[in-house]
Image 1 (cartoon, rainbow, N blue to C red):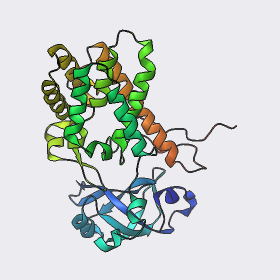
Image 2 (image 1 turned 45 degrees about the horizontal axis):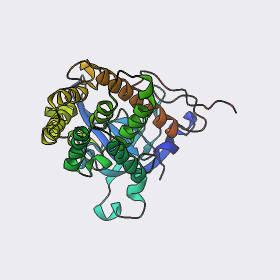
Image 3 (image 1 turned 90 degrees about the vertical axis):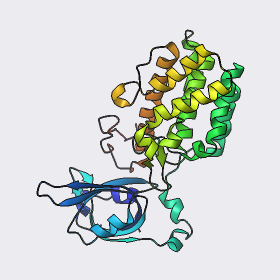
Image 4 (image 1 turned 120 degrees about the vertical axis):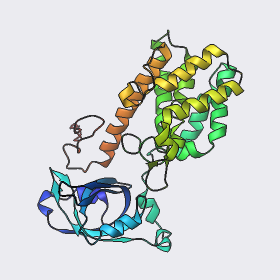
Length: 324
């Protein structure tokens, strides 16, 4: 069985050759062709990466995939093919794995991508950032939010696909932002340190409600109807009132959560309009994009010069290392 990384590392001359892999159905999107026929745009992946391909309605595996659905683990066989220079295999067989097969040693571990840093160490560091908030009611507000959402934050991805889209990704992303905040605060005296740190630690907490799924991440009902910005605002406001945070700080903290996406077209409820909100939004954007860079570099084959096009960067990424 070949991993996605091994498939992507094949020479393009291997087109037409057979392959077999055990992969997770990450996305299964039904579309209608111009002739009225239904087809699937399918994303399959494991811990080393993912690829997309098309399965047409007359394919013998169409109904199998439809019945399996997103999040299923399937053993697939087919031929190596490329579309516009990207791996896009033609699938011939797809067999969902039974529950007993999923319990075999190494199966789940090989399928689930996780943050490269140790999640226990990240969680310890994350809690130290909470404890370092000097303002007592702000600190109590942040602590109350994480007491309410429990362990979900530690396991959640930070996105479905764009950045830190893997297990513990939300914890990694937020901890990286807190590190950047700590390093940059001395350069921006206009920014209140406690408010900025509290805003960073809380900015994405709504994602623990927005996303669901164990092997494939998808939006929940509340995620679709409200989104993580509103969900995070609700969690933050409830905790701030409980902690008796003063009204000025409540308003400013809520504003950070509501504006951190930067642009309304990216999901922000409003534009950042306080020093702390601008600061947090910029750090969020920086770490999201660098998260895309880091993941592309991790998944690149040794001989690759460029990654596939990264939608969040609107460009492929140069992955070849500088000569030493």
